[in-house]
Image (cartoon, rainbow, N blue to C red; front, side, top):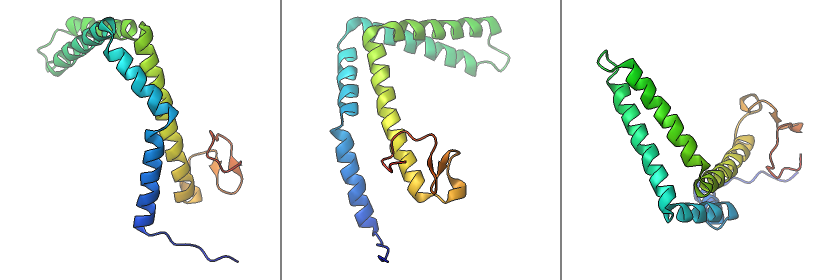
Length: 146
């Protein structure tokens, strides 16, 4: 039987650095950065983002005044303006592409986190459907070959 290898903190941090470097060169991050740049360079996308941020700030301001001072109808209208601005903003093709790329990048990072949980947590601490002994019923590609 092969003895278990103990990894030092320096070993682990070195592996984390390599993972970070791989992520920095990943297709997911490259697509995200490209979408971000395209969106930032598009005047209409910037305008729609500005409209959304302004509506959101107004909603937050009115929400904070809800200590009996703010008009409930004004708050509802501000909320509707946020929803409308969000819908219009996300309908723009470049903004939609940016959100889609961000979602893909976040999904990759989430999958990495699930792999870390799989190897670090005790059996009873694992999320439902992720058993060390029998494979992963909800696996999204940890590489274990389940």
